[in-house]
View (cartoon, rainbow, N blue to C red):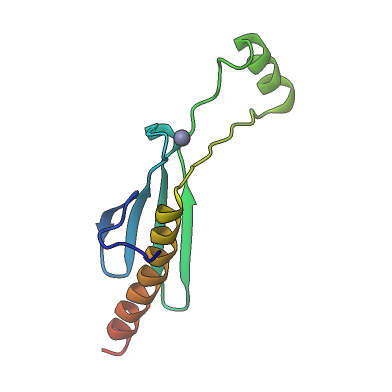
Length: 113
Ligand SMILES: [Zn+2]
């Protein structure tokens, strides 16, 4: 299997040359599982940040349990999983590789001016 173009499960959201944003969807289709991936180049390095907005899983425990945990521990654990097909995972890795090369080249071209 080789990476597809355009890529299944990977959507490009934004591209400012030195930074690109992708949205990685979950095979289950739940938007709450989707991850955002930022690939950014600064003057020295390339950073890749992956984040997801999670909702507290209030249904798994009672609300009082969560409120008590928050009061006593100061935080509530939440977890988010993104599931990918083999094809999507390949696309993901290829997208990352290309994005890193792109932002690096853009930054090099800009700094040599
Ligand atoms: Zn999911």
